[in-house]
Length: 259
Image (cartoon, rainbow, N blue to C red; front, top):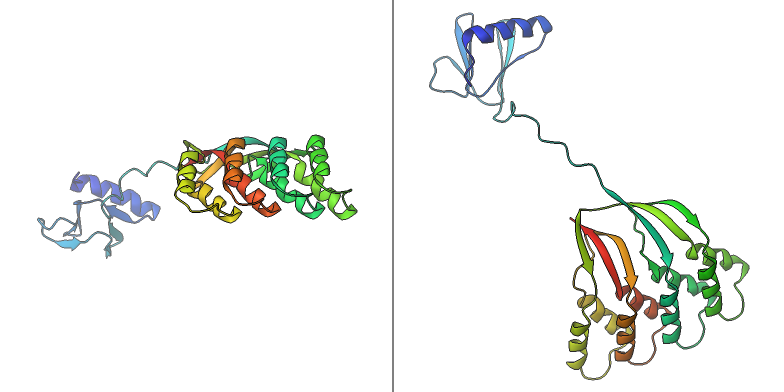
């Protein structure tokens, strides 16, 4: 909209009294002391100001606005969303891992399984609201090892078992489920000579995951026992303790909030 001479003079007087510079909107013009100043309108005579230009005209400071400067500001970004999660170690997962390996688990490695069997896992965007001991989980870990926990490891085992309530910031509102397609894994197995080792079968599980977890927030999960049993039947020999933990993570089904 073009600003009339009379209107601009009124604004100019107010701006001068307040010590505020005058801004000419797109294609506005203004006459000061007999000289016309125009913002990006070359059809008019006088001093032409390009968008962003500033000039002193008598006792006034003029600025030619860029297109969009006088547009309303964009709406603020939506507030970050968060979800409250209850996270605990799945005893069925621990049992499946125990049946897959040979022998007992060393006390210093048993927390690796507790972490692999925690559902849902908590990432760095989560803030712990509360944490309390899970005696059933601790008892399950105790049965996995030979003998008793050393004094310097018993606390770590108890802490690894804690039931946790956490508030987690989410990356987005799009809900997605991410799981391993066992038909895909079966196809890889039938097209391969011999049986894969644990590292290879874990790679297959990750390759056959229907939805990537990256750029998403885990808001729920469940250990997939059928997936783990299938992977164990396909592989050659028994997995190591670390391999069993990796297979458990790869076989977990995740509920995700994605961008």
